[in-house]
Length: 176
Ligand SMILES: NC(=O)c1ccc[n+]([C@@H]2O[C@H](COP(=O)([O-])OP(=O)(O)OC[C@H]3O[C@@H](n4cnc5c(N)ncnc54)[C@H](OP(=O)(O)O)[C@@H]3O)[C@@H](O)[C@H]2O)c1
Image (cartoon, rainbow, N blue to C red):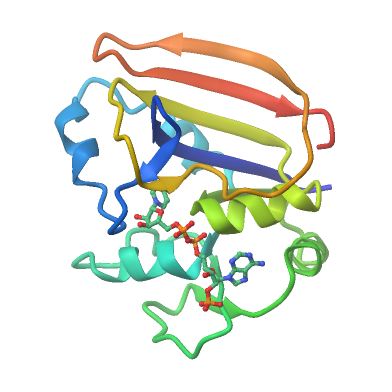
């Protein structure tokens, strides 16, 4: 089983982006002394998986943010390929994870967004959640996990507060 880690930043009220998909609200919490475990996570994952909305957001950046890791983008559309490391796929999550395991991947960063993460959760594919809870309430936006029925009981691995007011929660899924 691949270690699928949903690593993301969310508001206290559980949104990962504003209604228009914007994440500018995250910038005010930027602090060069805190990387919230990003380097550790990034150095240990073998690849990245994301939904097409998250991908389209990444496309708007001046350069592809993860050229040194293979990335898979779940989409049913014919989107532009941003970098040779990017593969577009219309596979169902369980089929994709199986094929990544067959390729020898041991760990992937599920970058988001909330729709794809919900779809992975629904099929019991997320082994760990690392959520940086930002000290802000957005009131509305794109949820951390789109609404999908079913409960998952989680085991707390670590809760780490930062001087900026961010608290990073690390949970393991009992399904994982
Ligand atoms: N705060 C953070 O750390 C953070 C991190 C990541 C993303 N974000 C934000 O999250 C937002 C995007 O999240 P989102 O929830 O709207 O979208 P998403 O999960 O990134 O993408 C959803 C889209 O992926 C495609 N898709 C293909 N297979 C799917 C499947 N099995 N399950 C679900 N979707 C599938 C569908 O579009 P097609 O029509 O292409 O098939 C679907 O509409 C962006 O604004 C991004 O900036 C924030």
